[in-house]
Length: 252
Image (tube, rainbow, N blue to C red):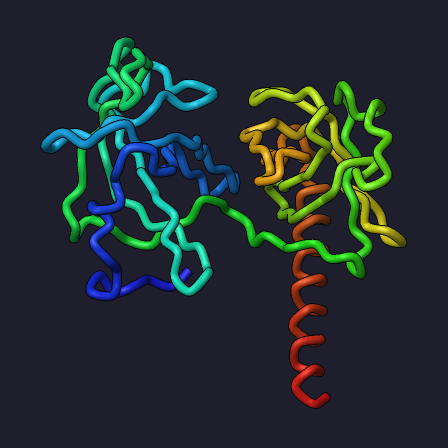
């Protein structure tokens, strides 16, 4: 990902308001192609300390004093780009007073200055948006309530929204019972070619705006190296085909 000139970035400190969505990046391992990203929200900014809601799964006290990244999603002309800064985990509080006056567990991290922000990444792999012509689908095991969905306008199975060699986003009917941290055996099927399988760890669960579906963020693990390489080849092939279609469309 290309760097963004600091002068072209807005003042991201102004966006650190209570309720703002933020991501704590605890670990990046380019060699093993793994990244540990945990979604959170801003609770408050007090001087040189930024308070975030405890993540799920929670950040443990063994990380106290560690260097992490904190990243926001910057919306520029409808495209979301992660912009973050290098921070230090200062403390984990069990009784922080949230904006709604409830007591919550919070992460205290060092606050940034405007010039500290840089463009970063929340994933290690290129992510492909799935369309109907792509011939890619996902099968998940261990989901409760999926068989109870019999509405004609609800999908009969998981709907694959996008995927990479490291994870996927999947849409399910709202009645399915699933929680962050669940481990779901998956099979990513490329029709007419093959499949890759492993375990999908649920990293996020969000309701769609109409509350009729759930969007799951899955992190792929327990995969054979050959399956990872196979998915990488398939991603590269699909991206190449999509770009060729875009070039062909220029002549229509």
